[in-house]
Amino acid sequence: MATVMAGQGFRTEELPRGRGLRLVNCPLVGVAVRHGEVVCGFHQGMLQAVVERSGGDPDSVHLGPFAEPGACLVGSAQRPRPGPIHHPSVPT
Image (cartoon, rainbow, N blue to C red; front, side, top):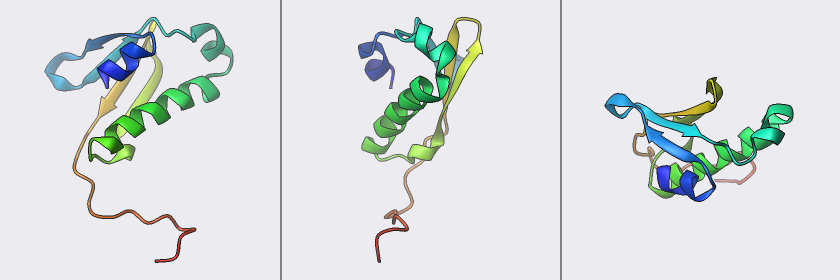
């Protein structure tokens, strides 16, 4: 996750005891302050995609927008995905 978010322009810092990441220097902070549901939602989706591609549960990663002054926090309780996931719109 840190590599992906750093590639988007964030400075990333590991939280103590492996509790997640601190994201500093959001490249879209000016827009995020006014339209956080869009910008932060996009970043949440990116984080979920990273977790899913690594075989984890995408719902296990959570972005805390502006959780600290000047920083967002990412927490993850990664666990292996429990078998196939079916979308309700797709017949099984």
